[in-house]
Length: 279
Image (tube, rainbow, N blue to C red):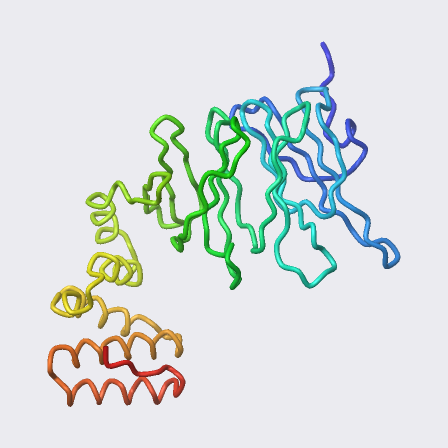
């Protein structure tokens, strides 16, 4: 029987293992380190059983994923030790570099479709043009096909390459489905999920999205009830002041000016910088 060697034995470095969904391939990587004040670049290797199919140095590989077909995606902190935000996503097959995509934002996670046709990743926490986006890459044609605005925080994603849809799954188990043009395709089902297991903040955001016309939003009793519940359940001063400002706007739009002023004063007491908008 052939002994299966460990990634460390095969590559000669200590690292982190990431398996493909079908368990056939292993992406093995080390982020790099300082040695006597000097930065030592990281390593990435692609392994199938006892064979190292790909091995290379990267500045500081922070995220690595491998698909069921052995395509490897690497998010490298290319600008490590500089003031520049972001890095580069590299996509390789066993033989060559397929694509590299520079981004000017923090990357959260990488996701492959089951057939390796598409890769997506999401960005966050910066004020650049690349922040709070989902990047959709067509690997077969080696192009970035979409970069869509999105602020739904998700922990997992599933790509349907035939229907060209993406299911985004939150930590609470909420599933938000969009197509590649960023059109939600499960609105009715998502509304049921929100009001059965979503938080009050989830419910508020959903209602604000559903009723983009604030004149219509402020006529919804469910919005009033949800807003009050969010205020009661929130202890964060800044968030609570914003919620109180919104409640004041609700009263103002419904011609209860005295109550609006009372609520706005509460918001300003919590946070003088909250800003009052009579919209």
